Length: 419
Image (cartoon, rainbow, N blue to C red; front, top):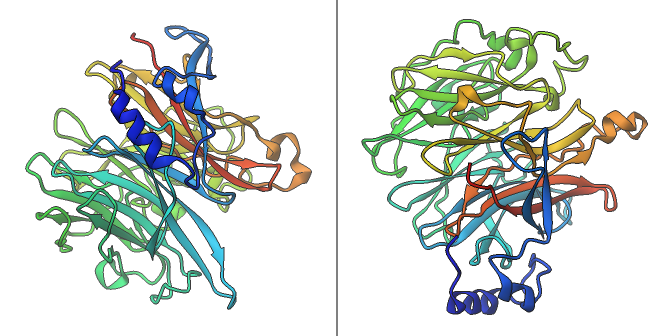
């Protein structure tokens, strides 16, 4: 672990004192950083890992914010995006994307920046050039949406998220259809520097967009892609690009981790189909698709994947060259919900029965107290995991806080021992 210099710590403290969304960390505790670990994470069924891991939990934002995503910028800052809804005095509604910054590896956070452009469920992609891309969805209920349907969009920043362009939306004119448009969470930067973004529309299929100038412009002429054999898109609103997370393997193949409605895929053995699986997206499941030809065609690579119904929102991180850390959310159907992680040599070897790291774990009141009528007690979960320059891991999450009756965002900074 690399120590933080006194100058860097003093600068961070000066920048962050008194800002909205600050963590409750005292100056004395900051002097101990980055070795301040007042909390622990439980490891379920430990085998290679100890029973607990060192951690620091930091509450962030205001009630109602949810589904955070983090990225480490080239200058060493950590940037977090989440979103929240807002009822206006004239009766209109809007959803805002909020940004927070940390200069001390996620221990304290600065004041909230509200993006002037609409969106929800933001997800970062950092290019090798330092350009930052942010995908999001604009729902039809947002008064700033002039299209009349929900659409996905990608925003672009050349200054670490301080300013953003007006965004490139995925519209009916681009992908067809007459319902909402969809897109992958992240954008894949290929080895030649070009970009690939999987986009589509409900009941209109999907295709790959390409950019050859770092996301300034997009070639939208990609041919429509056929559904993979074994996947019935009818049960997933006629598409499978929505919320895909893309990853490129060492052999060049693309992997797409896709959240699907359960009936779109072969059934999971010994796991009965949830009774509301056709209408409640909290009961969705994950599958893995593979492409050998840079997204032109896809095959169903792993279904069922390791997860059961109600587990989704994947994130992959390689903290070293030997293993992969897989972060995901248990959103429904189990007695506890929240963000978890497992580690293994590769995606295919992940063991979800041992060494399960409970980054955030809450009682599922939808299961324990069904009369409460809560459908999504996880508050979306959603968080990805990044590795900070000092070696610590950082995972954000959102969860339902019963004391305020709204979702709350937190950031969990934690340590993984050498394996």
